[in-house]
Length: 309
Ligand SMILES: [Fe+2]
Picture 1 (tube, rainbow, N blue to C red):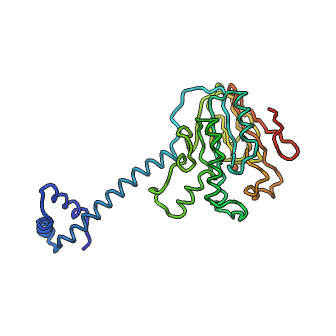
Picture 2: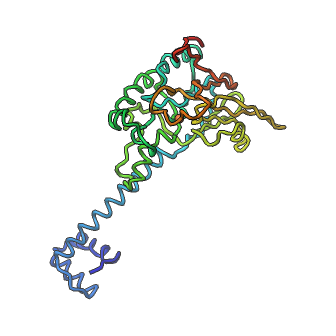
């Protein structure tokens, strides 16, 4: 028999009237003119409870995932005067001097806001593109990425991380495989990150020179995003692009900044970019008293940082 909502609803009367299953079957058959046994109705009851629980779990998970993946930061009235924008690190395939570079930069500027512009991890082994068989497996790569991130968790306990194409690969793969939301873990759980590392789709903050919008990478065209959004904009994603374009209107001046990357150009994981004549610029963005700057990591012969800021 095909049951409908009314049939499932009727079963509530069993509990309300403290009926036995025999009595419930008798009342059910009388009401709907059917011929159901108590076993049929017990099975229907089990199925209804299961459906209800799945619905509840799904709705709780959807809320959690939306919060985790898509919630924009609440309006933050604070005006930040010293902001660090950590560019694409691609752990565990980051430049070997990333930690010392950021440590020294933080000593110099004492940042009051840290934004990681995305691609904090590479996820090479689970890429939608070909993976290099000479690199670690997905499990080993994740372990290495977490280990590499740990000192950054200590150095910067509070970070807003922008959702990105590499960083979100685990979720994109899961969705692509048809996995339900119930199996998802949060970014913090996957990467063993502290609770104040918060992943957001995009972000807007206040600086002394006005609002600044952050996203991982919507356009490599200089100045276009700031013109579209009507405010200063900062992006990562375009590794070979580290530049600032100012745009002036009758009302205000704003800028568009691409922050380069902190990935290791020598890594096999970044091999897909080898044919590009433009090489990655190892650099980060900072905003001091509202003024954006690119800080390049100046490399010695051999590719290591020369230690100068
Ligand atoms: Fe990247």
